[in-house]
Length: 182
Image (cartoon, rainbow, N blue to C red; front, side, top):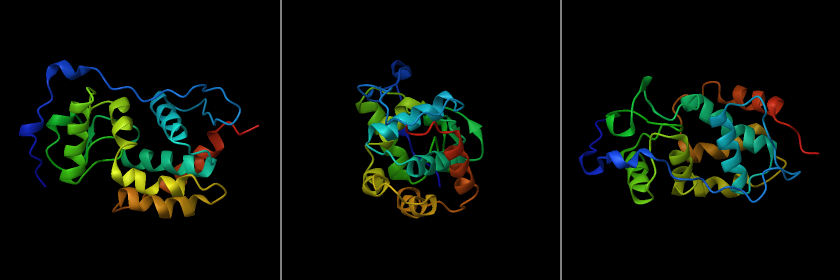
């Protein structure tokens, strides 16, 4: 698939990134943390909790999915090239490997409208939580007390991956890294 981004040329002034809403208090006792996680992993964990997702298995599932898709590298084009958003011409791009033309273009249009950089973790997380596909699974991710497999099944509606890969293994790894609720 060839992406046409002529109408989505990102201006040089767009080097900044849009902000993901900061929670009122990141140290509340009900927030899960991950001290051994990278900055990008922690940013995603915070963004998902800011969406009201509190179940450790739901959070671990979401992080496991992103790790499988991109290893949390925001400027990655499918196949492994590390390039800016506007230079990815085929395949998926970014944290969740936005692949379809509508979703790929949506990332660029969103960041243009909200003055963020589609090649950054902040810009992509901001778009992700506003995307229709994401909003359709949030009610499932907010249901506490389910298994990783249950959350994984419902998250398929969000990404529709072709290869499951290690995403479930990664999710279980995250549950061991998380600081538990008190």
